[in-house]
Image 1: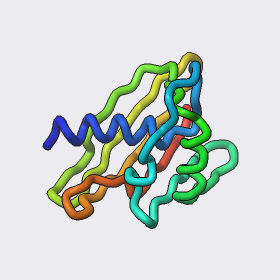
Image 2 (image 1 turned 135 degrees about the vertical axis):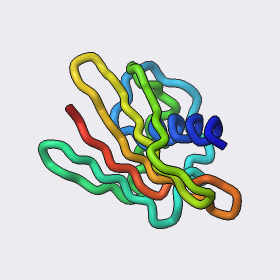
Image 3 (image 1 turned 120 degrees about the vertical axis):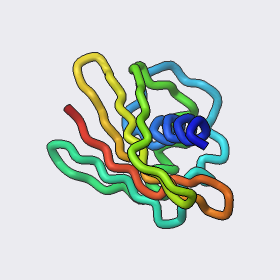
Image 4 (image 1 turned 90 degrees about the horizontal axis):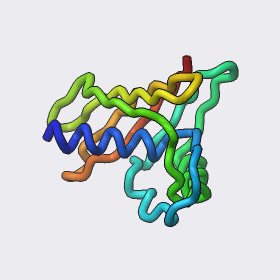
Length: 120
């Protein structure tokens, strides 16, 4: 489960990221399945912002699979059979983006229920 969790948390972070920095790739498919119905994304920056599930999905679909130009590391902060919290750190040139991603086990499928982003 730890390997699955780390892999999914890394994918989740990339999926909910608010920055894209690369050439286009194939369109994002099935992105709706990654998120719970009550998903929210909180971005802590100079002006705090909260994005709804539909806003994040719309944003991701517009990205058409673009990739981020950064080094990514993932740490599982806490986990149980029903939920886990992962910290994903993305080191870009000139700044670092950290995400706390909460995932829940929804009938055997892991889904993202919340993402909190901060920048340094």
